[in-house]
Amino acid sequence: GRVEPRFRRVVLKASGEALMGEQGFGIDVSVVDRIARDIADARSLGVEVGVVIGGGNIFRGVAVASKGGDRVTGDHMGMLATVINSLALRTSLVKIGVEAVVLSAIAMPELCESFSQRQATSYMNQGKVVIFAGGTGNPFFTTDSAAALRAAEIGAEALFKGTQVDGVYTADPKKDPQATRYERISHERVMRDGLSIMDTAAIALARENNIPIIVFSIHEEGGFGAILRGAGHCTVVDD
Ligand code: UDP
Image (cartoon, rainbow, N blue to C red; front, side, top):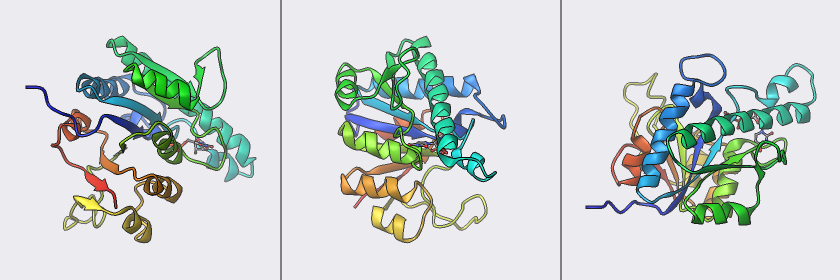
C-alpha cells in the first residue's frame, strides 16, 4: 500500500559544499544528480518540496571581507554562487522528469524567475519543486536563514537540514566515539548549548513559526525519503 508521508510540504536545505563531492571546489554533477533522485523520491510520495542550496562550494562573502574587501560585495558574490548551484539542481531534476523552477531573491530574468511568496506557493500547489536561489537577497544573512524564512513563507511543515552526519550529537561523532545522537531536542536547547546545526537567526525563525528542523545526512542516498516514510536516522529539533 501507499505510505502516508510524515509531512505534506517541506523545505530542504543543503550546503553548497554538499554539491562538490570529493572535489575541493565547485559542482560534481553526479552528486547533484543523486540529490535530485532523493528529491524525486520525495515527490513520488506526494510531498511538496522547496529547496535552498548554499554557495559555500563556490564563494562566501567573508572570503572577501577577511582580505579587506567590501563585505556587501562579497555577499553579493556568495548569493550569485547560490544561483549557479540552484541552476545545477534544476537541470538535474528536469533531466529525470521532475518539474522544477528556480525562483531568485535577486532579479535576473534571463536566467530564472524572481521570488514571490505567491508565485512560490502557486508552483508548489502544482507539485513543482521550487528552488529558492539568491538566499534572502540581503547581505549579512546566510542560506540557513533563507531556508527558515522560505519555510515560514510557504507554510512548510518541516525544514530538512542536510548535514555531514545523520543528526545532532552530544559531541562530534567523528572525534568522540562515545557521542550519541539526540532523537529529539528543543530549538531553545540547541541555541543555549550553541550546537552548530544552523545559525541562530535560522533557528530562532523556525522556533517562532513552530517549524521543526529535521537534521539528517545529506550524503546518505535515500535518507530523505526514509525519514519522510517515518524511518531513517535524524534528529528532530522542535519544542
Ligand atoms: N549570502 C548572503 N545572504 C543570504 C544568503 C547567502 O549574503 O541571504 C551569501 C554569503 O556571502 C554566504 C554565501 O552567500 O557566505 C553563501 O551562502 P552560505 O554561506 O549560507 O552557503 P553554505 O554554507 O550553505 O554553502
